[in-house]
Image (cartoon, rainbow, N blue to C red; front, top):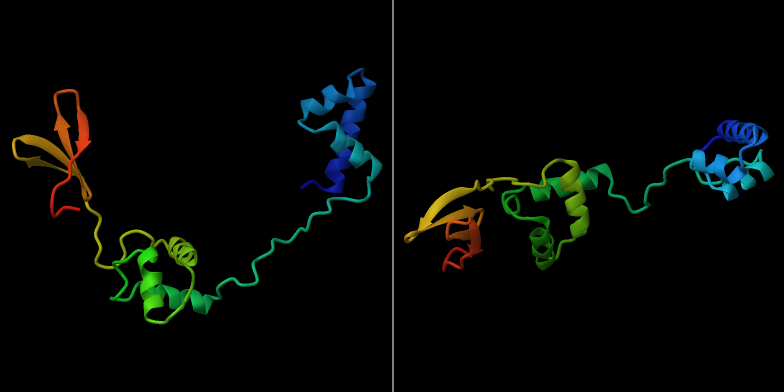
Length: 161
């Protein structure tokens, strides 16, 4: 957003450039301003920006106490190891509604608790052997090394998925 003072400075600078022999479209293009915007500013120099200045917050935003209750439920022993996409349906099965799945994600992300809460630990990538073929395990995915070119193909192992 531009203030009235900034607009008048831009109008003055463009007018000086035009008086020096520049074309209006080239002068506006040099400062990345459309000619139409310049014309509107010249017509209504006292009007200013009509967009609201304040940042509006949604009326249904969770309060601080509701956010704390959501975090308490998400960090409880029953739900600490689950993702919000699993927490919300389980709460619905129990007849409880705290917030939507996206709200769970939003609040957990704001609290830096979105990854590996509770007893859930991050799995590191480690090399394993599957029979005689070398393989690479990334999380719960297993990839078999095919040949000497470094081509990895997914392997379906019973009990791993």
